[in-house]
Every structure is written in C-alpha cells, then in structure tokens.
Length: 249
Image 1: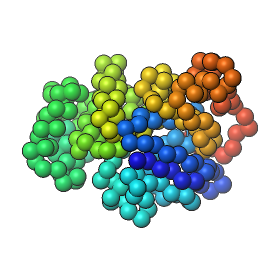
Image 2 (image 1 turned 135 degrees about the horizontal axis):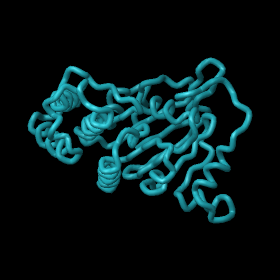
Image 3 (image 1 turned 60 degrees about the vertical axis):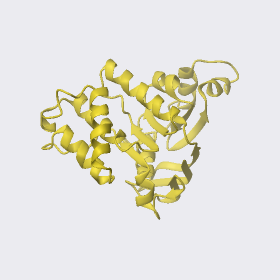
Image 4 (image 1 turned 120 degrees about the horizontal axis):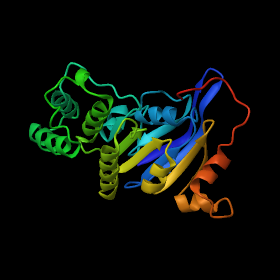
C-alpha cells in the first residue's frame, strides 16, 4: 500500500532523506523512530505529496505521488506535526469542509462526524471557533478530520504530542482498530514505548537513512542478544560528527 523507492530529498548540500526504500503492506501498523533531524518528517511530507523528491519515488496504493497525485491523495489522510486548521471555522464546520473535499455524501459526513466527535470528546467544542481552542483540542479536531473519510492509508507525524493520557489512549486504540480493519497506518514518533506497543514493524531512521527495519522482536534480536529496544535504538543512532543544520527535517 505504501512504497518508497530509492527516495532522496536534498536541501542544498544536505540529504535529509538519503536513498530510502521501504514497502508497507495493507493493514500494517508501521512506526518510524529516529532522533531529531533524522529525516522522519521530510519522509512523511514526501509521501503525502507536500514535497517533491530530488530523486526516487513514493507510491500510495500503486499511484505515484508525482504522476498521479489526486488518485494517491484520495486514499490517504495526513496529520502533520503542526496541523493547519481554519481558525474562524468551528470544528463541525471544519469536519464538513474536509468531508466535502473528499466528496463524501452529506449523510456520511453527519454519521462519521458525530461518531468521531463523540469518540474524541469534542461535544463541548463543536460550536466554538477553532482559534479559541487549546492545542490539545485542536489536535483532536485535526485527527478527527483526518479519520472522517475512512482513508485506506493514515500518515501521522508525532500525533501524540499535545494529547493528554486519556486522548492518547483513545488515539492508540483507534489506530489499532483501523489497522485491524485493513487500513495501513504510518506514524512517526520519538516515543519508543508508543512504537513498541502499537507497531507491527518499526523503521529506525538516522541521518536520512533507514538504518534498521523489523518487528520489535527482530530489532532486539539483531544485536545478537535480546536487548531492550531503547538500547538497540541508541546503538543505531549513536552521535557522531554533525553535518549541516537539519533541525525539523
């Protein structure tokens, strides 16, 4: 469902994503781990079609993001690390707007929208302007909007940031449920515990490269001993000589 083929993205002399090849199957929950400036966010933006690769390709459902962008985007939802919302709309107006962008039937917008409002405890906020909401509430609105059209591919960049423990648990359960029902879920995170709890497979990125891919058990065993995942992560991303400034890539 997701394919990255020798994907490269350069910013000047900096290779933020450097020859990444990856295949993620339908119904798989895949987590990308990596330190700051590893290339996680850039990879997800390439996959969402927000950046053009320097070379290589990204495909969703067999559609190349460069040659068939509309077909690919119809299959997916993307929640960036800093979601953009229209401040002067209410959450309900924003949900309807997103549903209309995906040409959903009004009855489906109403049905799925009400279910998501209830699931993410947004009942008290649906009639208020978005610019009056807290960061965590805005994050829940963005997540609900992404889930509204029941995408076959969910791409989320640090989705737990800003969520309290209750709603982080709700999101985890929702993503696992969607994956069990056949959706492909790709999440980037700094939190090893989130990746280990949820992911079928984990990819570890460092300096633009995917340095290891496997299930949590496979990653632990690759070291020759059953080390904690934290130890495997730290050994694969050990600090070394730094390159150009690449914060937020």
